[in-house]
Image (cartoon, rainbow, N blue to C red):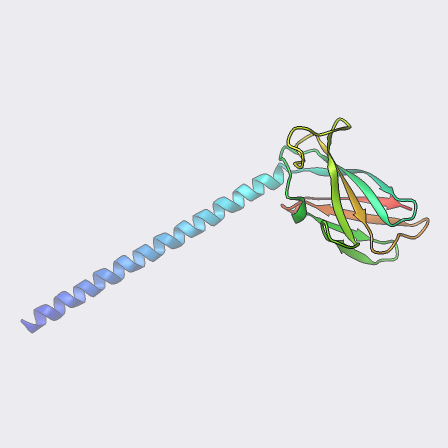
Length: 166
């Protein structure tokens, strides 16, 4: 009789272990599937995103640059605070420029435009075929007769670059 209780207890432990193992395996497979799905969605978004820097105008004193970006993709772009702007001076100094900081260096968006007119449909979102003007205030002015580079990257990692001269 004692062997019967031990046998039943062992069988119950084996069944409990098997169910626990199966549950863990299924939840791990589900997590991997969700990660793969998210990666595919992100890759699709990246493939549909295309921005191009078209014009860069340097201020007279060299302390700021206005850059015009064109959304040539099919994805609407937003969350400008998550974008990166990096400026490389001709002398080799490289500066990451934060969005809407209190002091220079900083950059901000000067609005979205459609065919040269301010955008009235979803302002603050760079839709396909629209342009975005950004103002980059530099911590140190660019030197006269120097060629510098600005690199702009969206939140999903798509980037463009443009040279600007002062």
